[in-house]
Image (cartoon, rainbow, N blue to C red; front, side):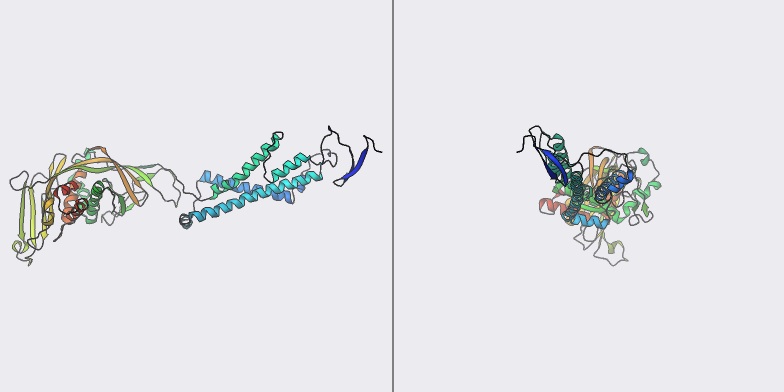
Length: 490
């Protein structure tokens, strides 16, 4: 008969031994196979031999993943973004959902590989302990939960609970971390710009020799495409003010959204100007990039520039030889004017003015050839100087008869903020701080441009500027002849 102190000899995990009857105070180390081996001197060769096989796979796999991730991150942080080829960028922009799905799957695979290696290492560590010193049942169960990325929420096991929570969170953020690192995204690189341009308020400009200024003030305004582009800016501004809608137009191959506010196109590179200025094939850029811009990026930039505008007021006034200034209107058929031409149905009309004009003396006469007789549709313009302002006299007939007026123009220099994405420019002028241009070459150039544009737009049947004004009037009132609205647009 067995007593209370009797022992049973039972085999456990392949090792014979004896176990006492358990009591309430016995220590619970169920997986105890043998006594711990004494620690010896570190043997590097033996240590490296232990890393062969699955330990080497786990360690090498995790190291490769970490190296790939941190190397990629370091390159992006030190050298800047890694740019895709333009073809790849176009595909990503065209298929954003597909691209996000593909890179999310890649991120999931990388995260799953890391988790698999981690779990693989934990399971083999358990096996080593089981064949070695053994481990307690609590440690065994906790380790199994750690390997499966489960949570241990036991206040008596704070170390295991903390470890399980950390591993659970790290496992959860792996996929999102890889996805945020690998998924292509639009980036914004801020780079300061510097530049220079003429100061239109500088009084030295007005003191320059006339022959020196002529190429800029006069000759450029004689170029048809250049003059048309600048007058379209006024058309866009008027359309925006009255119809509350913006118009795009092209000036020197640059699209403007609404008015240009008196600025000319410029960019980060030189401008091919051979179409507009035959003697000046290239206008060098005056903008300098102080930083580095990665190649292949689309860009937009903001420039603070000096623009040009004017205060304009128009009155429906008819001048004649007895008014001040005096205006003379001559009309004749071409046959009677010059018998050498058999053009009896063409009428020649000349408008002249007696007043002080600009230094170039170009604006005191205007001519139109119209046909057939009796239905002359013309819109002529002459100009006078008046201190810091100019008086523009418009004499119209035919379908433009309601557009005869005298307009006073006071040129102003205005600060303009220009926004561009490389293809279109939109401007934001600060009209409240505009200052007088002071009779300088910019104002003379503007008046000369209007004068030349009026002449270039006149045909034998219609006038292009008159047609644009009529169109604006029709959009606003529903009819083409309204003197008050026409004056407002002028």
